[in-house]
Length: 394
Ligand SMILES: Cc1cc2nc3c(=O)[nH]c(=O)nc-3n(C[C@H](O)[C@H](O)[C@H](O)COP(=O)(O)OP(=O)(O)OC[C@H]3O[C@@H](n4cnc5c(N)ncnc54)[C@H](O)[C@@H]3O)c2cc1C
Image (cartoon, rainbow, N blue to C red; front, side, top):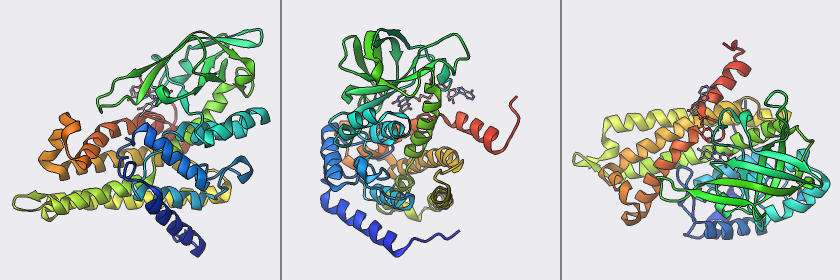
């Protein structure tokens, strides 16, 4: 494996880093730690700047408004993006990160023309409506029903944990259109306008002081049949493809390197026993161990990248990166909390503490979710055991 980049790729990396430095405002830089983000209005402004630059849908074909970048350039863009401290674009992840690739693979030409341009400009913001109170890891148990009625479906039931649905205009949802066979059969993929009569979106209060999730209630909601993506009852296959895109999005490696750098910076500045913390042997050892693990993960990323450049798909490394990356990231944020020392205790009074302390403590709370969102670590390990190691199912 050759772990270096071409001159052209290195020039692109430089261009990205310089452009972000020159264009990102202080309102959005260094506000995205542990999966937290800048406020929604600032995110929208930043989304639009990237849109004008043509750097939103990195891998999409140019005729669909994308940048048409190959996987290596996408990797370099995302890496430099994280290192610069630019925010996670929550206006983009469900729409351009998940929904648009699905429309390109499974949607009709009309659906692509109707929805993708407004996703690019963030004129419409999307949410994901998969999980339900009794269907998370066991997603196929979902019960929200969609019954055909003339040109429409009538949708009833409840979704939960829908990220940013309070800011969204549309939700892409998995709904039950048939209950007679195996539970994976009879699921369909439906696009629902959240302004439709009968829809109620209710934010859920969270410990990290904002409202990252919502419940969505559907009460006799009419949804036109033209909003069905793919074939009726065939939504499960679409959902499986979408989750691959989601897992690739969940963990950016650059965020981990950024978090390690931050721990180092604080350890040089903060004192412990009359000396800078970085001179404490136990701390140095922990930092060094995490750096070694991060390096190993980076090389696994490169391996996935080479594979994806050769075959068009990242392969099983995507699941491995999701599990190891999320767990390593949590350990790195724990180390950041240690580097903050007593200041980390101000987590209970977030509004009044120093901005970076705020970011780290909030990020520490938020990062707990990384081993759950996009499929929990336990479920990922089961997939790896069955599909990679070929272990027998009990
Ligand atoms: C940050 C974040 C964002 C999210 N955003 C969205 C969103 O936008 N839209 C959406 O639809 N959902 C979203 N979710 C929900 C997410 O997909 C679910 O939380 C996840 O699938 C787990 O489901 P659950 O919460 O019902 O937990 P459960 O499925 O009840 O699992 C609880 C625990 O049991 C373990 N477990 C369950 N089954 C097994 C098994 N067979 N073997 C071993 N262990 C098992 C799990 O690993 C977990 O530790 C989000 C979640 C998070 C954390």
